[in-house]
Image 1 (cartoon, rainbow, N blue to C red):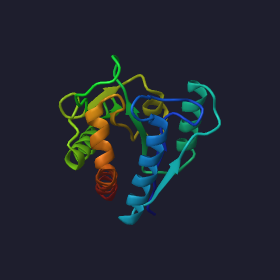
Image 2: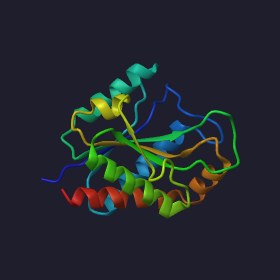
Image 3: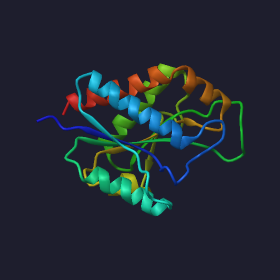
Image 4: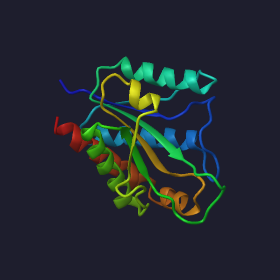
Length: 187
């Protein structure tokens, strides 16, 4: 039996994320939907969840985790966009994929996803290989499968990042989907 990859957009309808040139909540929903379509086009299985009810960050992340944990699945993916302090910038900031610190399998997948985004778009890799091991994020800590990544597609306050993201949206989503599908087929 093939298991799906469950993809959720970060934050929620009533819990805003990063905003500047583009809005994280809006864009994460577009990316999650397109990645799922591409996975299915490649013959894989996927499901998408967008949280629309909660009004605070704690309840929002708890609902996202609850929904992910309700599925028999192969992988948990959360789609986000980021921002750095200091307001709008011209220079590129890049892309990165977060994983639970200490999970070497997810670190490799995170690196592969970030490199796929870079290859499809020209966005730069943050932190060397485009990965960031974290121990303090509910999504990575509490999705009970132990196989989760959190995408930070680009930075909403970088003019360069946003231009590359918009220009290469389809290619970015296809590259992410292909990377996830290759990983899933290796299971």
